[in-house]
Image (cartoon, rainbow, N blue to C red; front, side, top):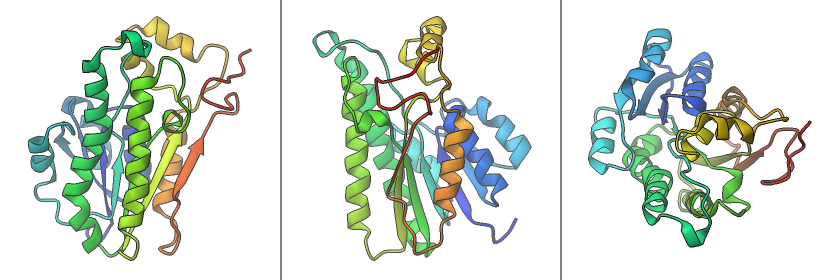
Amino acid sequence: MAGRPLAVVTGASSGIGAASARALAAAGFDLVVGARRVERMQPLADELGADVRPLDVTDAGSVRDFCAGIERCEVLVNNAGGAIGTEPVAEADPEDWRTMYETNVLGTLHVTQALLPALVASGDGRVITIGSIAGREPYPGGAGYNAAKHAVSAFSRVLRMELLGQPVRVSQIDPGMVETEFSVTRFRGDADAAAKVYEGMTPLSADDVADAVVWVATRPKHVNIDQILMLATDQSSARVVHRR
């Protein structure tokens, strides 16, 4: 295993994070993976030999503990995030907004700051952040998540500018509808409501997004993929979806 590049993946207990970890391992990367639900990452340790560590990206202390001992890092996949609720602005709970901001935005900041020295020292670091079409198109019922993901997009663009000339590439992948636990969380555990989001259409899978993560991570050193917008064939914008 010595000499293989190292990838760090946050939010790796399920969905896009877990799929990205598996895809990166298949592409030849060693792995350090983190999430709050450590027990759900055990298959990654068993299958891939991943270094599984507890991580709450909203807690600076947890991030420090997670990153302790990571002396080399070629790829960081900022995947931890998520949405809560679909209430309009007039009825939104500020605590839901706070949670989304702390997870999506401050979480990305905490982990990126902690690993940036190792990414620079690698001589070919890559920061790949999972954004969302919600960071490009606001839509009714999505204001809190829209605001958080727009902030993530601004973060990625500024980081790209600030690191220009340094050996670190900065990329963002913005998926549209992906069938994972995302909607279950958004609908506060209501699996029936979550299933209706994808009714009559074929959404992206976590593996589809993981394919893009690996493609971005393995481009030649002189190539930076700044942004990717990924949509299912049945989706043309945030709210325009073809259903059968």
